[in-house]
Length: 138
Image (cartoon, rainbow, N blue to C red; front, side):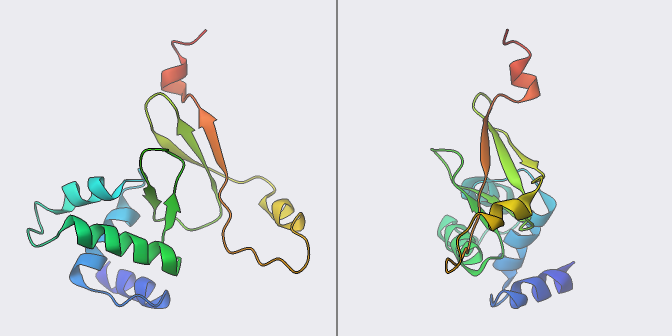
């Protein structure tokens, strides 16, 4: 997997390092839309030299280069998604879980953009209660 991750990051103009590869691998294998703190807490036991600053700076670099999505769906935390294919997200206001949703007719969204505008990012968020949390709601 290291070779694929190395090529992936290089393709986005990111110079791979041990820490960057570990952070990217975590995002690719944990589709939970983690925060920087969650990633740090998961990786630091096996990487004692890893700092929170490194994780934050790496995630910022990844997002700026388009290698990951930075999600501001939660007003308290920024979450990160290793899946950069076009899709929407659902945020449960009760438990805080974030779920991936397919974008039905996503191409039609782009048709609404007037000529001359260059879209560099699209984020579609739905908010409400997930199945688990809505069971107790009448």
